[in-house]
Image (tube, rainbow, N blue to C red):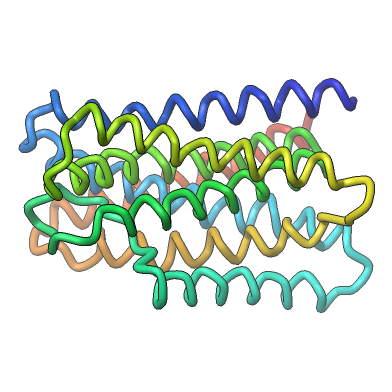
Length: 250
């Protein structure tokens, strides 16, 4: 069991670092294609995050924690933590082509991304410590958020005057915050009880999905695009629900 957790954390960390390099694809993909497809991916990401929170993390937290109220307190703390980060650290990530956003401070984007990756690593590691399956569900929801975020953030760095090589390098350094968070939780698990990370992460996911992502896909001027985005959002929800039902049945 211990070996399974260690292998899972290594694989999850390596995959997250690899995703950080995918942002470089935005340099080669036509901007029109990115603009056309990116928000559909964002919609799926929002559904995955909210589905992960309600179908996996919160039910597991209710099983693992003795108090019925405590998981919801941690859920709201997780929600409020990301609200504060967005208010004071310019946390909001770019999920649109660079020219459609105001030009942010590029180093602030990297600082917030690094902190985001550290918290993500802690959340995934905490989930793996409870159950390997829950850990992979948490990883999947997190990585589905990272895919469109990395494409958008890479575009922001280029728009801020960075070279492609520099943007890729610093983006990769930022991604190393994920294994740092993983290692911190794993090696301190004997001394600390990290169960609270389940509802705390659920609150994080709810904030990112409902407050950060949905406003970007909502109220599109085209009814056709609104329908596509809603179907993509539902697909993310149903995908996480299907995995829950499948693994519980197994």
